[in-house]
Each structure stands twice: as structure tokens, then as C-alpha cells.
Image 1 (cartoon, helix red, strand yellow):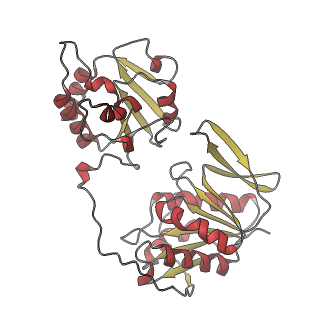
Image 2 (cartoon, rainbow, N blue to C red):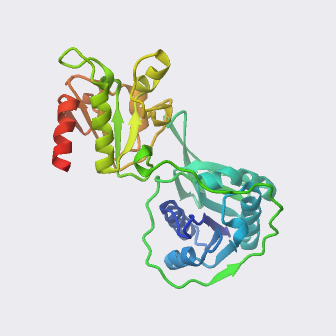
Image 3 (cartoon, one colour):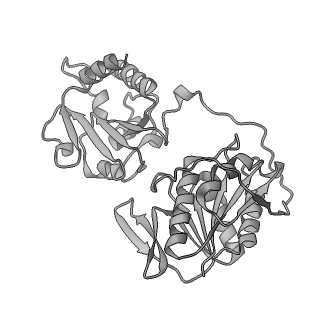
Length: 339
């Protein structure tokens, strides 16, 4: 019988990110499909609140590797904690969210355990009595389903690809696992981050707003209005809390010596050579909907676009709604409505 462990880590305030509840839901469904039990392992400085948050999931046990050594993400301590939790649970299958903290260490942990790892899986199910995971390859153009006989099998789950398990907080019983934390030369002295308004990439946003090269081109009056475009876009992001994406053509303009939107970089790029984000809704403006760009929208639930050309790529069945309009004028009206 398979022994399933769902590995989680706390956030800086001791809570759990929503990707943790996605992983717990996947572990619960997998255990039900295999007629097995599952356990939860949590890494963090103090896991009491996190354990209470998942106590209602029906896990057989909740293990914890907690203490000051695990307050900050560090490879040596996180790897030791994950290895100890997997061994304590006797896990043959380990599920974990593909967060930056776990993605950094779980390949090494798998090697220590003598197992195999699958990263960024988007689904897991039971097929013919065996667990099978789905993954995307070639820039999310090819989806595969695979299984492995080797154990332990470590699987990281791509955040946003699975439903979030809704749980009411309850009182949890936690079994602490002793971890021989190795000496670390890494010292975390603080965290530097940009102001909230300066951060344009927001993975948890409800809306993805994508700007294309049309924002920097000549407009109906024969002149370009990049300063106004910057004001409109940033104001919309501020009002809605949306995440900002870019077409490849707009991101590439910085290397061509052309005047660009100063807050835009290749990190914002969406598409075949960029990111494939997951947001409930998406709005594309001033981009034409070419296939290399649209492939990055594969996991957006509701897609809308604004373009002055009714025959653009977005109109070819690639968007739910196409607004044939001038993006400058339309977005000004939207911001008036938003107040």
C-alpha cells in the first residue's frame, strides 16, 4: 500500500499559501483513489497555525520540523527537514507545491532518498490502480501523462493548476520530528522588496493585463504617446491590483534602441518564450494575438482583447470577447468607471 506524504512550508507569518491547500487537496484525492491514508509534513519556525489550518483535511498524522533553523528558506536546513519528514512518514509518494522554496531543494532530497522526482505536475490521478501525473512540455504545447514504478516518488505540483481545498480551522495534533540541522554559513539579514505599487508581476492576481507594442506606436494623430500610455497602464494596475504581462514584440523593443515603457521587462513576457501564468481572467491590449503569444494564455480561464483591427489574431477563436476599439480611449473610460 502506498504511503502518501504532503509536504508544506509556512509563510513568514506562520500561515500557509493557497498552493499548500491545492497540494493537500491533491493528496487527499490521491489517497482516496488508492484506498490509502496520507500524512502532512510542515516545515517552519512555528507550525501551530498552519497545522490547525489543515487539521480538517483528514490526514492520518501531521508531522512537523519546526524551530528557528527553519524560519528562513536555506538549502541545507530545508533539505534536512524534508528528508527527515519523508523518512518519519515512511512515504512512498511525496506531494509538494512547486514553490521557490521547495523547488530549490526537493531534487536533492529525492537523491538522498534514492527516489525519482517529477516537477511542476499539473494534475495527478489514479489510472488502472496506479498514480499518474500530467505534465506539460515544449512551452505548454504537449501534455503527457506518466507513471513510475520507482519509490519514493516525489511530485511537485504547479501552483494554480489544481483546485484549492476549502477547510475550516480545527485543533491539530502534531508529531515533532527531530532534525539534525547542519551548520549553515548562510545568514539571512533581512528582506528587500519593492513597494507594492512597484511590483507589477502578481501571480495571485485575479486579472492579467497584457500590453502589446501598439501602446508605443503612432496613434491616430500621427504621434506616439508613451508617457500617456505609461500613466494609463500604471493607473489601471493600481486601481485593479492586476498583474502586468507583455508581448514579445514590446519586451524586445528595449534591445532595439526604441523608446519603451520603462516599467516593462522580459520578466513580464507572456507566451512561447515567456511565462504561462494562471489567472481567472485576462485582458490583452494593443497586441494582435499571434500564436506564439497566445500560447502563454493557455491556462487563463476567461480571455478578452482590445484591438482596432477586427481581423486580428484574437478574432480567430482565440478570445472570448474582442473589443474593436482604440485601447487609449477604452482604458480611459474603464478608469473613469473604476473611479
